[in-house]
Length: 329
Image (cartoon, rainbow, N blue to C red):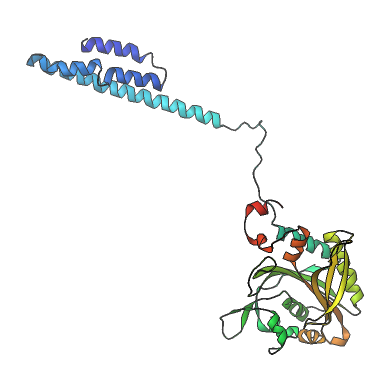
């Protein structure tokens, strides 16, 4: 077959191309290693010199023309494929939406909000305090002198600062004096927040955990008032059948001091918080005249309440970041 016949056949074949697969077959037929064009190019050496040049030019021109046509068709077919895929991706606004995945609250956040809601329903105001404290508010103003053995109960993270001795607060109690310095009674407050203690971690303890501090001050506030508030709080968190009791204990910033236990009917008594009537020295540190005011203060671990509420056997799970645990809440 000569070049003229090859051109005619190629024109006919080009009109039959429907897709990229057809185009590849055409390319092999006319430009492949075993194509007619390849055979013509190989046979040029057998032609007389005066015919060889003309035949070679025609064959190469045909080859380039076919390469251009095939490339153009390839671009067209690829464009069609892209446009088809784009049409398939178009959003059908009448179709039902796909629910977007979303997170949920951590159990510490959930129980903190429940605690806040419980006390707010009883007229308590929610406050926050600084996590970096100074020695005065963390210890001295709370009736814990520098040489007092009670300081041994708090394993403190001290910060290397000068001249003021700063630390990561060991409890949320410093907000008692900070608030009373700027506010006059009567008032009711709770202060939830993160605290830090330099101690080993285990199933019941962590170096970083959450507490909430409570304080109520008025002209006539008694232990009976405290018992009523805490009873209502525990019932809101753990159920109306929850019981509570108080036992004598010691904390430097209260006098008298006591522990609060709770239980469900016929269950075991569990220690839940420390509390007491505000010590006169704490009132003095805040600028109050002790005889004019009475109040009670209490503090509990939010982690411990979450542990009891959700029946968690290891407090470290709350800070593990393990989604297998978190997704259960």
